[in-house]
Image 1 (cartoon, rainbow, N blue to C red):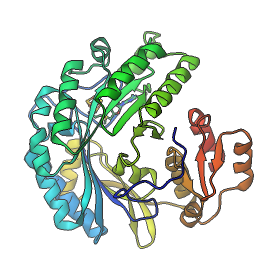
Image 2 (cartoon, rainbow, N blue to C red):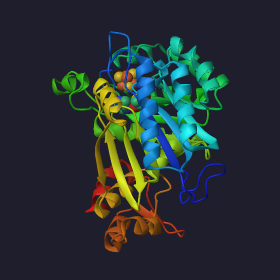
Image 3 (cartoon, rainbow, N blue to C red):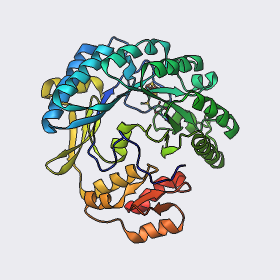
Length: 396
Ligand SMILES: C[S@@+](CC[C@H](N)C(=O)[O-])C[C@H]1O[C@@H](n2cnc3c(N)ncnc32)[C@H](O)[C@@H]1O
Ligand code: SF4
């Protein structure tokens, strides 16, 4: 992992500069993958997309009335499967954002897409609407594994979609899931090298998580889905770090790898605790209003969200002012995922108190964190696999 403390190249925003992200959630998928617990739903009847588009427009207007005058630095269409949206719907959403806020000329506008042939035929329409970055859910480069993961695409189709993305968008990324049942480090190394040959400036590599109440959780509980043991999981993780770094895409976050400057700027808004609006069913936001940081969440069920927005202009079901301790925990939880770590002075400015030096010293002694001359605290390579424990220790 590149541990240099160099600032990231322009036009990438430095941590201290203001950033404002807008997240739009499209909650529908063609089928539900057995490992997934995202707010995604399958509907067999046609979705009234113009009605959803009107609700998005209404909720954006209501949010902009609460936080006016912002300059939008990033927009992210996530899901669910937002590549099922018509390009016209997406264009209407982008137009509305631009009517209510200023959109920075170099704003990053990302769309999450499933890599099927049907969806890649829409890529040019999304580009014309303003999308300049796409993130594809490839998940594996092995057809047998793709079937086990319940995916609707083959490896060939996924690689073809990556090829279309490369020609249509300025920037693209794709996701793979590893630490899969039966996966050996040597197989993963081969698959990862093949993926890196297709990659641009960014890859997301997620370790398979067994999420409660998913079909994978039931299989796991019944002993029918065995994850790699701890030593193999560690070897898979170490292999990932080494191969990606050697290829020029070091980890900049626990699951994300990029050439310096190729980071996902939208996700950095979350990890660096900047401000963002959450639009659509089950979206979360963090809004700075009158010097206070509000945590907002909208109704998760798509149709209930729709009727709520139609009745009261937004789908918000909770809007809490974060207390100092909550801001502190969130800042640590998000910021320490990043290779760049956290700025200790900013921690103090945000939370109103410094981090306990005794706790830092103890983690330091165990080789799990390091402090830089520039006043940053970051997790070391041996610290990343036990990140949750490090955060819990500092937050306690
Ligand atoms: C919102 S989802 C994906 C977008 C798109 N619907 C797709 O599936 O291609 C974002 C990513 O999270 C990852 N993911 C989802 N559930 C996961 C799990 N249980 N374990 C590890 N990664 C997971 C997948 O790599 C997925 O591409
Ligand atoms: S992984 Fe993607 S396509 Fe599969 S259910 Fe989740 S959001 Fe939908």
